[in-house]
View 1 (cartoon, one colour):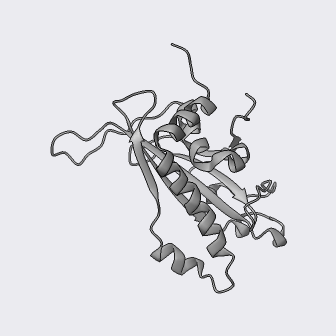
View 2 (cartoon, rainbow, N blue to C red):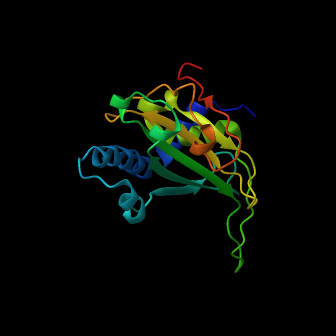
Length: 188
């Protein structure tokens, strides 16, 4: 079996879920526009905004369902971003599990390969942000899930930012030790 690259996974995912992928990308863009409004209230936005998601079959295994959730956060107090940047953290959360069977509400959580997980992140973030993203969390949590979190930091105009050296990575994830790992470059 030939191993696919993350970019090949992303291309397959975009082709298969084109409307869902464009909806998620559009949600990130609209959210950045909303956050630039002078009267924007971050706390209220978090309480009233429906967080978009995408569910689909794994590229590698038809016996695996992948769910992708997106979120947007204000990381400015977690590191010394330039004040003029008004930084935003765009997050892509990826979970994978076996399909539900019968009446059971319990899910059997299973990990995706690193390449496929990155492919889902690349598909959702698109070419403008993928190469600037970081893998923050990819380990089993206390609930038995294997969430994978990719984040990209952008300025108020959506341009990628370099993460400051003093950035508190634990704030960007879910309380576990975070390890920033840049995504594979488009040329690889």
